[in-house]
Length: 496
Image (cartoon, rainbow, N blue to C red; front, side, top):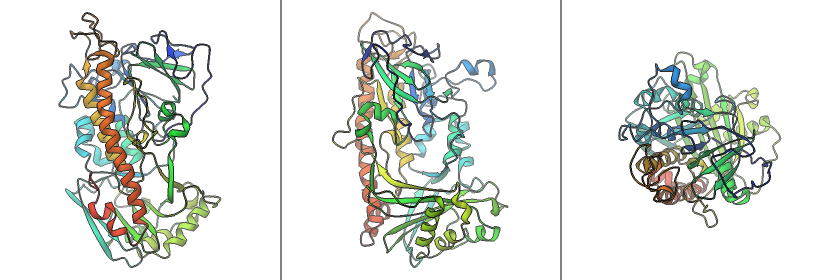
């Protein structure tokens, strides 16, 4: 989910952004919000969006009937099958700026496909078995291979098809609810600063409510406008870049007859998309169909993206005007797009419409490299590589980030009681057999784990950010549309 706005930190003597703390085991000018079972040797995850699969495989599973211990646990999650239960008990705490999972009324849906095996490896089998319930149509089982058709927006003729294995179309609100189930999440926690211990071991997150918490690794999973990214790089370098296109997302319900028409053959019952010779791109599909026998209760999702200089912002004053603009564009489209927009009631301009500039942030761009403070802070998902959405890759790369980081941390973690050098909280090498939990090899061990993760993630994520921009530009250029990555390669991981 999106990152928080940067709130000015109320600085106090001796505590400045990025300045070392003499004793990071103590809360400074605030209340320590840590769980004592983890102490400072734990992982802090900032953002409770769709990457809650980060925390699950690192923490020891508790039986669902053990209610008395639930509130003392950092999370109740089953370790992934490949992880030894004795090594997977790594303390994690998730901090989220929103006051609750349902705080934001805005919703959308996302495609999960090539990263499905990675998600399966990260969450308990009981949760994975319920993934179907988070789909836009939970009543229609996912096909082994799905076909996404690209239609000529002007004529309705098929221009091309993409074959996609295991294609799940997930509602953001539902998958988030599923992944937050049973986790220890601290709500209403907006991060405003990070400080670092002088010995290289710890990072402390400071929150807007005056509390703070210390860990040996902080993971920024706080969305495209990540506060963690801004704290690492400064607000200017961390800003996303608008590209020369925009879109207005529209959510609508229809009459019973209209809803059935919009899902009848030859239309795909779940989704379809259409480039247009005039330089537009349309998407129309289902968003929520809780009851297959009540089409009048189904919610649909549609948008038409259009050229708009990155430095300009629309002069349309309200949602009703944005909806009117979309209807005007849709009149040049063939069915089902024309009727889908024309039948949208004017009242849909209340909460069912939102306009936005397409934007991205490339972690591989010169000047975008961050200092991870010897492996104490890193980024995942949209916090690391927000990308345009017209190749359906964002969620998949975010899930792969989570899997790769989890695998590295788990492999490099020394549980309490292990013999060997000082691993406590990422402490310095050596130490005469300290049995405190932490990274194997101390600071150097953690630095290698995070460095290896970031090297692969920045390369892969940066390539997809650049590919996504090129794909969006080509989809809006009729002479180039058939050569666009999504038309040539579909939704595969390698779209080059």
